[in-house]
Image 1 (cartoon, rainbow, N blue to C red):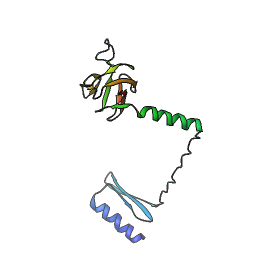
Image 2: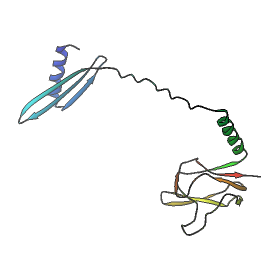
Image 3: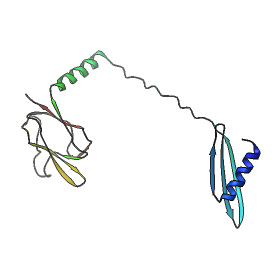
Image 4: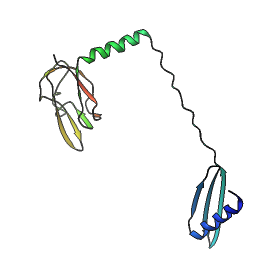
Length: 161
C-alpha cells in the first residue's frame, strides 16, 4: 500500500465519522484513530509491519515408564474390568447422605439391588435420587461427598457376582 492510498483512507475515515479503523493486510497493519478536542480534529495513523506469529508446537516429554509401573497399570485395569461402573446421569453436586445428620446411602461392601438409592445429585436446586440399575456389591466409591460431578463421570464400582 503506497502513501497515496493511505492518505485516501484517512480522508475516507474522517468523512465517515468513525472514531477508529483497523486494517490488516498481508504485509502491513494500519490503525487510524480520529478524536476531536475543542472542535479540533486529530488523526492518528499507526503503520506497523504485520509479522506473522508462528507458534512452535511444544513436545511434552513422556514420563519414564518402568516395567513395574506398566504391570501395576495393567493389573489395575484388569481388576476393574470385571466390575460395572455406575456413572453420573447429570451434572451437579453429589451427596452421599439424604441429610447431614443421616448415614450414607451405601458404603464399600454393601450389597445393592436394582432400584436402591445410591446417592443424590443436586442440579439447579433439584435433588435427584440416583438409583442402581444393577445388583451386586459396592467395591469402590469414586466420588467424595458434596463434590461436583460431570455428566458420565464414574461414581461407583459394583461387583455384579
